[in-house]
Amino acid sequence: MAGWIAKSIGHMAPLFALMLLPLSLCGFFGRNILILDQTSHFRIAYLIAAVILVPSCAFARSHRKIWIVVAGTALVINAWAVLPWYFPGDSTTEAKTELTVLLSNVYTRNTNKQGVINLILEKKPEVLVLLEVNDAWMESLEKIKSEYPYRISKPRHDNFGIALFSRLPLIDPKIFSIGSTGVPSILCSIEKDGMRTAFIATHTLPPVSAEYFEFRNEQLIKLAQRAAAEKGNLIVAGDLNISMWSECYAEFIEKSGLRNGRKGFGPLPTWPSFLPLLPLDHILCSKGMRVKALEIPSSMGSDHLPLFATIGMPE
Image (cartoon, rainbow, N blue to C red; front, side):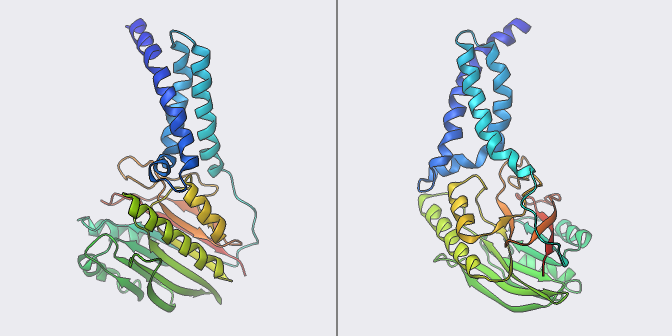
């Protein structure tokens, strides 16, 4: 039996290694090509596969050194992409105060509304961003009205309803659209301990087609421009339908000047909830701010996992 297993591995491992290496490279060329961009998001899966394939290629029947090098190259590429997220970011000034934020794509057809409400009451975030809310969701969320007296929402029958709830007063809250899609986002400011922070909650289109790919990228560029124009503290929270390994994401970060709250906590994938591999939901901050804690609570019936962050805000 052991001999048969080794023989099977010897046959299959080189084939998988030969597939894994180009997949690991394709994402670097996906700025304007949908299918290449989509290959960039699976770095966690590629890394796991590479860790398995490097020793497995030792069973290759011929040219085993070549296959070990091929699998090892894929391992290095994906480790270089994934592991830096576990290292702390640049040091920042001491925080004057902290703000807690819960971001959750609740899934429009999710029937476990009470589970989501229980999560909110357990975590008690000061700011709550909910995506994919419809009228039924908003009716259920009346249960937390006393906990969150300040709110703004735009429920929709599709998957792009949005709501922001706050324990703190909202300054100049408004619904607006980023780009030409008409999908609603929320813009407001929040003041705590005499410090004002601008806040954007948003949801980009999923790149399920070439047209939606262009729409998503347009939304990201417009969002980056708005973020770059903000002079004070800024938090952006939303389902951006993109991972940190996309070239489109890299352009967004470069133009916006924002920092991903995951830095120092690992990639923390949020989708799909039953086997999370892709970090699609993000909490980002302007430079000088620091995410002091970031965790993923349970999904409560959604296809996305939520993010719960504690953000330190400097003077």
